[in-house]
Length: 240
Image (cartoon, rainbow, N blue to C red; front, top):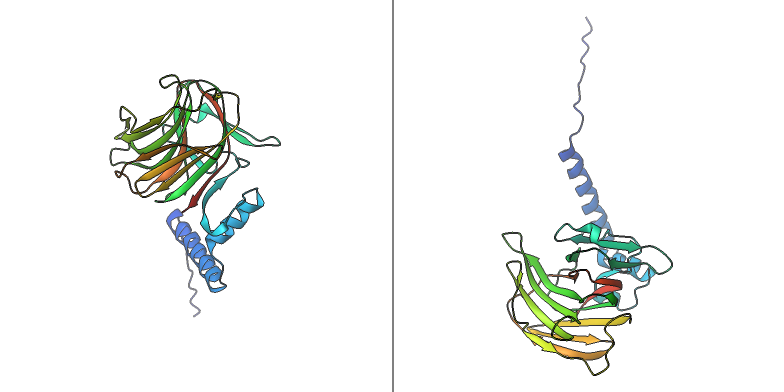
């Protein structure tokens, strides 16, 4: 008598597929490592291919906004307040009626430089977040440098965020030179973060220095408030 044995196989579930994908990813990383290629270097080469100029070994994050919002998330879920233009010169613009915070995915660090090209066409200003994180209550904490024509007739300021709130007054503030044009002028804005000292520059000129030791690390990002209309390009974070 011939006995026939039949085997019934269950379809693989999502957890099994996730484990398989993770295993493949680890294997690829391992192969690249054996070949002397770092994953970070691959990311850097891609960034240089889309316009980043700088030392690849220092790059933490770079975006010229050519790929839309893939590298960003809205802290308050107000994605409709932002527009990603994909023309000859892609950029990100805050165009909505209310303020919001966009944080850059994978930009975590401690000591780094943040740089972006920015243009405020109307409204009370924009800011760059640094050493930013979400606390146990899901609220934002960190620092901002703000390009703020609405503060006391127009000033550069630095603020600390605690449990989702901006502390008052700013821990650093300074007026620009007489005749400074806040609106409709493209600016290069840089924030150098090292230890407990933060140095802000606009168009290569130092405009403000602040000190605080509350937050040792965190993400970088962009904010706008009220109905400010502002556009950003070539956002990058480089380790110091």
